[in-house]
Length: 280
Image (cartoon, rainbow, N blue to C red; front, side, top):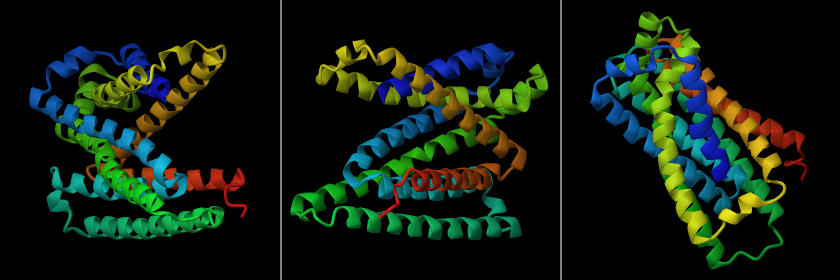
């Protein structure tokens, strides 16, 4: 897990951004420090959200954990951009339609979570329910909700960088970068902030558990190659989201984020169906 985040938050973004983006330093020189501080703070929240999601999955299971975190993240990540420079659009027809769409998405996520709970109950019907299990479930749900709110920091950091800081606009207009390349400039500070928060946790855990030696196993090169592929796909998905949000206009971080998150749940459920996760 630490290997994946190291590649996804540092190696892939740093190499791709420095290699593809023209005028990166000159672009950032025009951005106020307050914007970077906001991006950094929100991206740290994103990193914390990623960590809490992984921890909560081990407590409450993939089905409920995935739906709960994505649901909370979708709700907060889609609504909060309205109040970061777009509150006037909330009362418009378009704003109300978006709110209605988010409400429908939430109903679907609730139904998906209920299905996951029923499936896990069926699979664990032979297991005796204890007070310890109840406490684990409760703590896992609390961590998942907090993690979902924190994970919305990714979308809010993007909103601040692109819609308020205008990093993408400067990168495109002044230095001739293509829109998708400019999204790298927009998201690069968020990757670094999130990565720092995540790696602090993993350095502590690997040191405490004396697990560093596990990277020397004979299967590590193959695993790291697979992790690199995962990291490239993961980063590419975020860049494509950013391009979509840009193309959608001022409300793109609300509409696009809801579509993006819902797509994650749909694909995850389809993969679960094809892999036999729902066979019982």
